[in-house]
Length: 301
Ligand code: GUN
Image 1: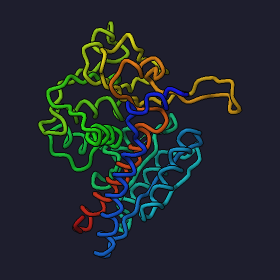
Image 2: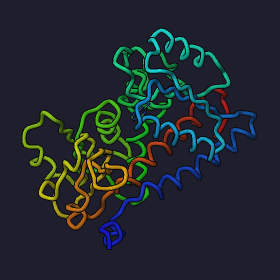
Image 3: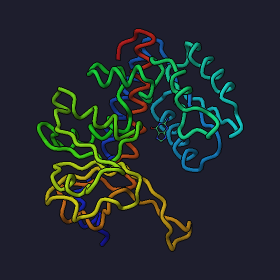
Image 4: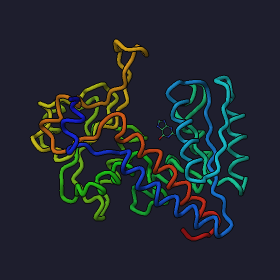
């Protein structure tokens, strides 16, 4: 038996929670349509990064499943910053379009900061615009950052409280680590955590993770978090998707930032890779698109 089968009661299934969120969002889409609003998401992919292509296809599929209109702009890696800014401006001004997602990373000659700043904050379904980041930090969010919000949904679904508990976030990226820490330190019952952020420059990371009730691994290193780094009964949320060489048809395998096989016996709960955090990021993107569509049309959801 594989360890995912053997320890199935410890698995936090993002797939299952995403299905639950999708049901809620599908209901909101139906409500919008009753009010004459057709929610629509525009996705921009620049270049041909294979992982980004996979993610963008998943986003298209999810829109289709939930009745959200979607349009994907696949642009060449040579696209200029100016051309990209022009497309975003057109989408900002198009009232039939409610959400704009620029898939990251962008090619090196395009400034990520300039592009993210150009997306209208009400159409910023990633919560990457500085205005939306500011609203999140100050506790009055418009939309929530997709991956961190998806992790909160997983914890809620499995009744794992963060209130008064010590959460150690590994990683300080703008996409996961920083917004995750911000979300969990907010003053509300879905948060109220004591948060430590550790990262590549932290000395002796294990001294922090060993004190954690919940570890969120988003450090981008394959199987970085090992069993000796957590206390017995801890909860592990694995955000990583790393390609490692493998003796299979593809020649590679996808593994998380946590050493699942080593950890599963010691922890009380853990997300698998795949089927953990990944599906939640997309589910929360769908939620944000519906929220954005309602805000722009003054419709109710
Ligand atoms: N690249 C990796 N994750 C994400 C994400 O959540 N949103 C966007 N736009 N790009 C990404």
